Amino acid sequence: MSLLKDLVELLEPIGVPIETGFFSKKPPEEYIVITPMSDRLDFYADNKAQSVIEEARLSLFTKKNYQALKKQLTKALLVGEITITDRQYIGFEDDTKYHHYAIDVLKEYEMEEG
Image 1 (cartoon, rainbow, N blue to C red):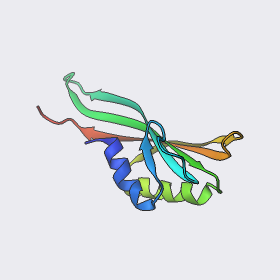
Image 2: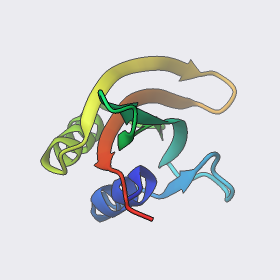
Image 3: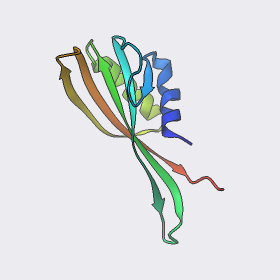
C-alpha cells in the first residue's frame, strides 16, 4: 500500500520518465516528478485509525504542448482509481523552457494490521 508505488505502476506505460522528489538525470523533453504531500491517518468513533490517506503532486514538465499528456495522465489516474484533487498550470519557466503543469492526487488505503 503506497501511493508512490501505485502512481509509478499506473504511469510508467505512458512512457514519460518519472522520479520522486526531483529529476536526478539530465532532463528529457518531457518528465514527471512525484512529490509526496501528506500521509495521514483517518480515525472513526472508536479513535482507532482505520485508514491511511496519502497525497502527492505530479509535476509534469514538458517543452511541448502539455494538453495531450495532461489528458493521458488524467485518464490513467482515474482508471487506476486515484482521486484528483486539483489540476493547474503552474507556468512557463523562462530559464529552462519547460511548461510546468501540476496534478494533485490522493488515495485512501485500509490500515494494515501489525
